[in-house]
Length: 492
Image (cartoon, rainbow, N blue to C red; front, side, top):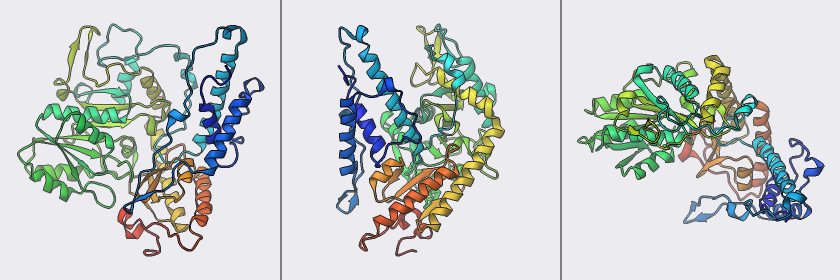
């Protein structure tokens, strides 16, 4: 019976001990009655030893190119679900074992949060006041603006949040439609779908550095998709964009504009994209979706930054709610023009409502979390956090270069791109996002100077051992970030 919830506990032990010691400093001690069973901890120790003996993912070369390093197969360490024993209510063993699993998992989360830098999630939030609502199944199925027969919803919070974002992007209440999505990808899927409905024969254009969900949308909707080259910064190359739209001048253009690219944090020049379209004869034959997953909520609070606004001829904007705002579950916001949405809407008698969303049932808790944070921080609170992030990002970039590590930071961005660490175990420890020879750190409100110093000191210490054999050389990132940002032996 002991350990019958699965072998995943061993993996938790491995993840906490892979670097030689458990994260006891940051973790709370496990109560005595919750100590994991001996055989489970033995398995954890064995897994930790195996992990130390072999890195989780090693750099591999095939035809001179780096292979993608994939994560571990979770099926080897999942928590199995099994039927309770006949005497379980009397012995209470199942409850005790599950409590042990959850307690150790919580300790693992504390440790992994301490070493989280590569993905754009704001981990600094406290929603304790909303715990009283977790006993309710809140579902905002259907249109946010029309109540359905299901009464346990949070539409009043959702519409309040949508109004806030519509004001942020200069769209009047009677001119917009939107909803709170389950993630940023759903926002892109919906925005591009609206564009496709407005121009059924349109061609989708997106820069090569757009988020993968944009190309997923093209596959899902069977749309012709043209990838546009980018500048070294990662923003769209409008000269190449013009060449490609002119090759298809007989078809309307549906364009994904990035308000912060995934890897380099580059912001596409929205004004130049619009100018290019108009000068190429597409005045009334284009639809622009702005993917602002992270920076869409930062740009409005950066002085002298170009505005993302519906006063310009754009069709939709989407942002993620769990990124800059900070939320315990993935969510997002999608806003479009009301005049575009009728083509997608349909009456649903079963709901006594209309629906133009993608998912149908939608998490009714997410709007409450967003409403709570927007009310607590307001515009001034977000402005302070944006300034902090940009300031700390510059600090990280300067410290990296001082240490002889090539790095780049785009204007208007808090994403610091630098040479990829040689050790994949170090990459996993700090949860860095990598592509080819580069990696990045996304400086969020939850990332302070102390955490950056902790990371930098460990990186510099480890890096000294990676290249001390006189043979290994630091990677050249000139092709990725430009010669001026590369500090390899050739460009130093």
